[in-house]
Image (tube, rainbow, N blue to C red; front, side, top):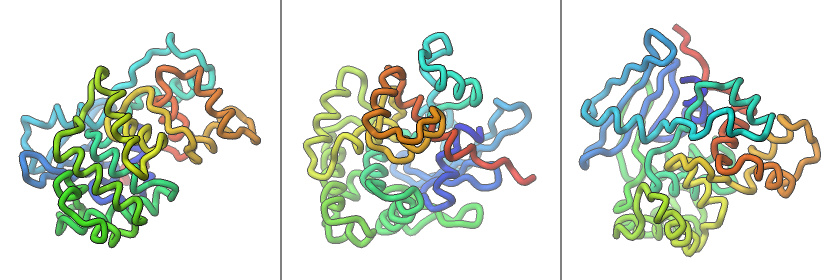
Length: 280
């Protein structure tokens, strides 16, 4: 659990709708047009999880399946010895994601060219424009904006979160695309290319944002965020190549296909570390 939910801890309590607090994962979101919350904690054996909150119990299993994706490959399918070593070092890791492509797009636009900490602060300001907050575990949580929220908001309002004018316009544009059902929230393999093309047509969205949206939004196994600085730092450390550049990283990643997103998760995990254990 500490390995799978490590990305939540990397934001150090700044992300608006989720947090890692004393060995537990806290989440706030929307279901059936209402704001709900859940908490996950490990109980008993390493694989036993306890979930509670005010959301429908009937939806807990589907919710967990959306945000925690099992890795899609086995050791026999890994050609790169360094990635294989990381997989063995972190054997129980799943791909944590937001569970919807829309949330992945919003998070990726907000996070363009800034640190994790700054992205969390900006996302929190954005969420506060649309929701008063829910008080849990000693802090205030807010769900990310819905497609309708962003579709109906003027860019000037979105700018109050601290994003640039170009990113504010991009957030409003993707809000309209999803609110109008022009884009599916969980695209299947047949529509994936069309969805990527539609996102790339939005001014302010490039290949890094699309790949990050696919990886962090819905856990696509091969989504590769080319140009990611933290990923480059992680690869330099793992492969022991101090002068590795972005082009060299792209060449290395060819050995990870079709699991470049999952390999990237392992590299980030090795660089930034698992979430801390419970203090209890």
